[in-house]
Image (tube, rainbow, N blue to C red; front, side, top):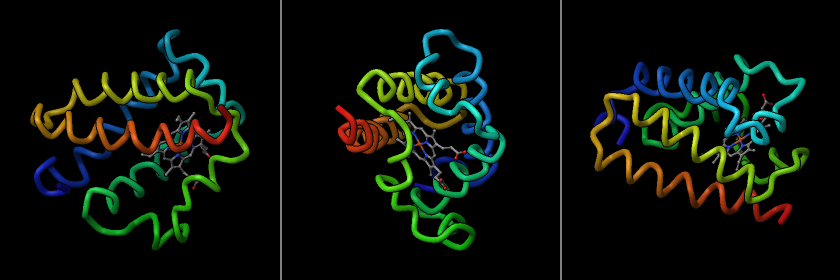
Length: 124
Ligand code: HEM
């Protein structure tokens, strides 16, 4: 998957677009609000590192921050289905701007949706 989607440069651009959309699109305001007080550049670095390993590339997140434990790390934030849908909305738009092949975009979105459902289930 990592190679097929274009490796780290593509992940970097994807995550930069994702956070750019989240921080500017009013349709994502609740998801953006969960990040208030956070340094989005740092959030982006973490997501890049995570996606590298998650797509089968270098395990950068594990090396830098330890086990991802996504459910535990999202506990401090108020995440319901609205925030989950907005997260996916931003990712869908960011994927659309990427050079990733459409079939692969669908595959990624389906996997993201599972993770988002798991994380938003924490509060709903
Ligand atoms: C369901 C909606 C989601 C919301 C509202 C949300 C929100 C957040 C927030 C507020 C942070 C903290 C950022 C920071 O500390 O700089 C975070 C971190 C993170 N999120 Fe999410 N997230 C969501 C879904 C996801 C999904 C689907 C993934 C992965 C596919 C993901 C991966 C991560 C990672 C890897 C981090 C860094 C964890 C850390 O080291 O603290 N998130 N998220």
